[in-house]
Length: 332
Length: 218
Image (cartoon, each protein chain N blue to C red):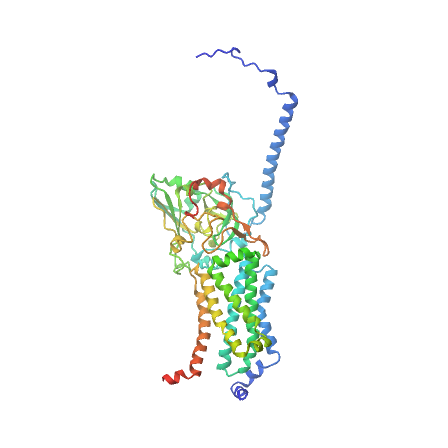
């Protein structure tokens, strides 16, 4: 249909709508300024990242692991990275003892090669996946995440890995799958803590499928530009930065897709203290201590006040919508 | 008479602990853990979490000193060396020294001396409440440890009051037990509990024998 207007096919500009040369120029300069500013900020953060990188550039403890830059929103914290010596000697990995110094002392017995992960449950492509194949499945990215332990301390760690979602897409979950269960290595021969009565072994954790699919949920193979040290969960582990550290399981051996909420290790040990979700939340205290503050390892001095803990460990913008409408006091 | 007996049993030993330098030596030995912690704190040798390390180390040393001071009397009786008693007050005050450091580390490093937060924590965490109760009791013992206090109270009352140390030992173990309950890890707790139970058990047994109830039954 032909639309007839007075302009007869040509919209006449009225004089007041024409941008003056001066205005035009000032807009150009504003754009130039903004572009410069953005680039400057980007350069600034890039420069400061390089400066930060000095802290962990070459611990030289393990094989180097190349990685590319990540494009995942919120995945590159600009906070000061925790020193490698702290991140690799202050660990909770009860399979090697309950003292935080134990894993670094005892984990050398862990045999990480050959290694494979059994992936099964409600998926189209179940099977035993070799570590080498999992490693190549997607591009290795560097992610700098805050890690908040339920005990009230935190670190900032540069991980190397890729979004778990890449693996999940590959194995094709069935329509009914709602949860993902993670089972970790429990070998009494190489892990002196297995067999202690602290927890039910093997250590099991779980996520809702949408949590597992979130781009921040990382399948990590390395940290500080090198393959994972054994005490940090070699050869591959999970990192879920908005949840308390114990959700980020180490030395993964099985991933199972299910329609029922998995029974997780700490939840089984003390259901009133450790919920299935265990999202970092300064407003929901642990029954035995406050979660409002945390001590940043290696940075907050002996006499410094502890820093305030952030909702979802500072990842609220990225993950908050996963829990819209949920009572976080009930689903802690 | 006791002195003669001691001389017969172990002449060299009796001489050494009565030496005028024996007390300063014990003093320095008891101070060594503190000096080590001070050195380690200044030179960043306390690991990734120095605050936690100090809170725990001072707690450990309080327990150890408690074991040492409670070992004095059994040792004194078993070796028939009454002069050992002269170390008891000093060692008792070292228990207080370490528990004070323990409390200061917790309230300073963990709670930034925020009185309201500390009060909330005492109510929230039973093991803090138990530890704090033990501290209050130890304070009353430390404050009455001087000769004039003993005189003012009278020997009997003073002794009765200072029997509270046995209760403190129980509270200390409960405090430690609850603290470790989160990790279900009681190996160390069991060691301290066994040592303290032995030292307290010996007292009961000794009292039993002394009052002759044992012989009456047999």
